[in-house]
Image 1 (spheres, rainbow over the protein chains, first blue to last red):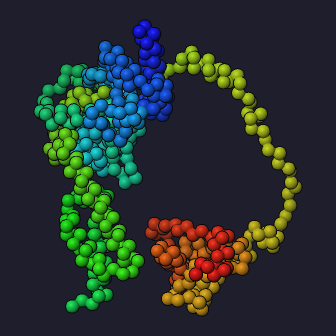
Image 2: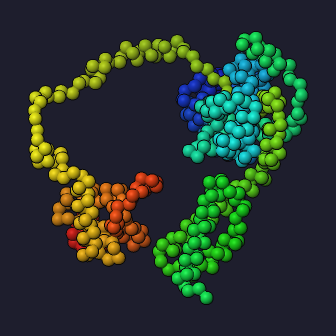
Image 3: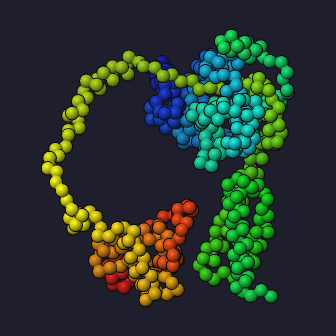
Length: 206
Length: 275
């Protein structure tokens, strides 16, 4: 029993190294890589790791191939084709977003772009997204920001200037929750206190 | 009462229009439900008995193919609407437009779980790197310089370059014009309906000459002196010279047509098996 525990502890360490450190151009690890490194019981190792990460407000996120999330328990074959990431389990506060390098304007622009593309069944003309963002963001920043979202892997663009959601959105954003929350939201007239603080900080630093 | 020929013409035009409409839908510029599938199938059925030629049947098949793509798009649309992720896009767009920056942020932060990753050197990776460096051979040893013999500079003449086949004996455009005239003469002598079988034009006594003629022929077509007529079902390729070179070469997107001029094909042509 103790030996088995030791094996899982060692596999969990190996999984942590593989998931936290970027090995490829994109972060995350493919299921088959974990399968090869940890053995066929890697889903169990990931479950233990996920449980352990709960207390740190982190989680092991599984993104299935081509967004084909299985309705029931995924098979080993489906898991082998999926990609695994470590993501934040809970929510960030607006103040924390600045700590990880996002300005409120840029993040709001990203939220609008993602929500708009979802509303258009997963693809939208770049000029339409630009038009929408132009209403509230300075024109020079709009194109620059969209290119940045593409570079980071949130959006992708084809030769016809159509925008789609890319791998990072699928890994980081709960699309259903975003749409539900947006539809349920009421117009907010007062600023959340932390956003207010952030704007004050911005003014101070200018 | 329309003649059969006129009916065919009208039918072809209708199919062309259907294909264009389907392509617009495939490119997501038109709503897939604007197309009345039953109506389109009725049109396709109506004209189908009249198609006899390969290109007509081809057009019919192409229409069916595009129609199938549209039906697939309609099916995807229905599937999407039936999922829990579906929301009325107009309502959502309205919400996005009306939401304040702060509201958008507060909603997004509830659904956003950014990735966590580390980029850091470890003692282990540094040690690995040092070991690698220690065993790495210097560039001089890995990429030894090629021994290129030194050659004294000299003077050559145009005749010498032509003899060595570095230059042609005519300016290329002149050569092309000559070749175009030869094509027109051959079509007049041996061709039918203003065209000639491709191999009958490029084929020569030696394989080398055949390849050279095929090479020049490709320029005749690229520069608008001639065109190809291809009948895929019969596997026949004809070349047809223009009376005057086309002026608008390069304004339209051109397509490349690979034609294998293999030694085996040349031998078959010599034996008269390619006709």
